[in-house]
Image (cartoon, rainbow, N blue to C red; front, side):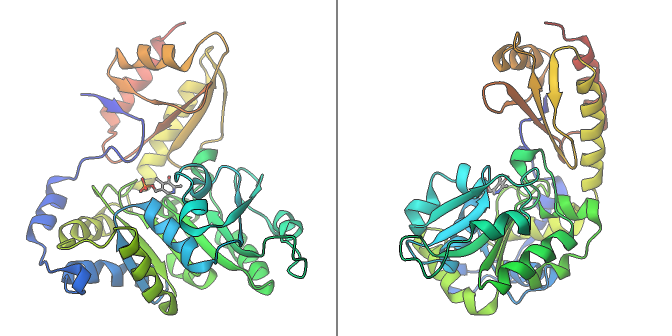
Length: 341
Ligand SMILES: *Cc1c(COP(=O)(O)O)cnc(C)c1O
C-alpha cells in the first residue's frame, strides 16, 4: 500500500466511476454528436452560472484557450508571479497567444485591486502593451492552496470590468476553494469571461477539464480547441467520469483538507522542517532545514512506501486526495514522526 502524496492527479477511477464510463452513450464529439459530452458541458455551465462550456483534455488546454480567446497578440495579461498559466504551461501564453505577462506578488497569490490598479498600462501610451486580461487562480497551487472568498473575487471583477478588462479564472481546484468558503458556485459565472475547471485533480476523474464561458466566446473556444488538437471523438467515456466526479466527489473534498491539516501539524513539529506554509485546502508545502536535501528526504520517505514531491531546491509538496485514506494518514504520520536526519 503506497501512500502517494505527490499530487491529487494520481488517483485511480473508482469501480462506480468506471461503470459510468462503460455505460455512457457515445458519439463523435467533433461533429457535436456525443450526448455524454454535451451533458457534462451543460452541467458545468449550469453549475457555474454561465451559458456555455467546452470539454477539453487538460487544464493547460482550457487555460490557454481561455487566454487566447480573450486577447490579441502583443497584449498583456496580469497574473500572480507563480501562476500556473505562466509558470507551468510551457510558455503557451507567449507561443500560442503571443501575449506578454505582468507578474504580481499577490497576497499568497491572491490579487487585490490595490496591486492590480498601478499595473494596468496606460492605453494611450503606444510604448506599453495593452493590458486586456486579469487572470486569477483559485485555489493557488504555488501558495499551498490558498483561496479567494467570493467577496474578494467580486471586488477584483468589479474593478477590472470598470477598466474594460476581461477576467479569466484558473479554477483547476475551484471546488476545493468552495468546500471551504461555502460560496455558491453559480455566483462565479457573473464575475468571469472564462473559467477553467479540472476534473482530474481532487475530483478524481482520469482525464479532463472544462472551459466554462460566455455564449459569444463558444465558437472561438471550439475553434481553438481544434487548433490545439483537443477535438476528441467518442469522448463521452471520459465525460462520464467527469459527470460522476461532480455528482459524487465534491462533497468529500473537506475530508482531504482535514487530512492535510493532520499531516501539516505533525510535519510542523519535526526538527528537520524549517517552515511550513499555512495549509488552507489539500496542499502542503514545507521547507527543509539546510542540512537535509529534498532528495535525501524523499528517499527516506519512499523507503517507507510514502511518496512526496520536490518543489524547488529546498521545498517539499504533499497533496491529499481521494486515494489517500485514513489508514494511509495514520501510517504516514507514524513514519514522519520516526524519520531522523
Ligand atoms: C493542474 C493544474 C492545471 C492544469 O493542469 P493539467 O495537468 O494540464 O490538467 C491548471 N492550473 C492549476 C493551478 C493546476 O494545478
